[in-house]
Image 1 (cartoon, rainbow, N blue to C red):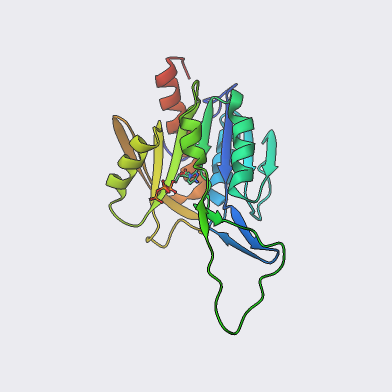
Image 2: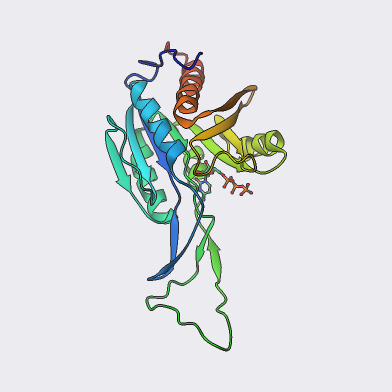
Length: 230
Ligand code: CTP
């Protein structure tokens, strides 16, 4: 597919749920733990899915982005547990789930309702507990939608991506190098797409162009799996 090839109609009538952006895990009323993520890639994927004819639900962590025109529903959340709740409700009747969110892996064991004051004697020690893995939970459902995960890797991208695809039982994984000065916060990205019996490199391009290519590949793999024509 060239960058100007049409994706219109390739996801016609399908329900697509996309999570995007970071999650913030509050420590006290003024502090939080979070991942670096602008949400730009996820919002670009939502825009491309709308162009492909899908009914799109976009679940967004704290981002400063306008809802792409045509998105049927946007749900704003803050924490990983709120994102999980929203995804699990939305995904019930979804055909495709695309997890672009940079979910915080941990949250504090105990939120402090009062601002933690600096003490001259010692720095506080935060006890962390693991957050739910939203992607793995959706992939473990039965029946389940076609499930696409994202992964940010610094090394051995292909190996780690393949391991993650199998471990989380995904239909497709889109991996990117985080050390390439592209990706987080930037307007460009590059992706390694993999699925069980194949893969494809999508070279560096603006996130909007890359999102359209990704949606074209998702549509092709989805229709190949369900046996329905695109
Ligand atoms: N993800 C999720 N819920 C989490 C953590 C990650 O849904 N609690 C999803 C992300 O949205 C993304 C993929 O899982 O689609 C990324 O997984 P990643 O965090 O990179 O994988 P991990 O299993 O945490 O592996 P590691 O951090 O060891 O690379």
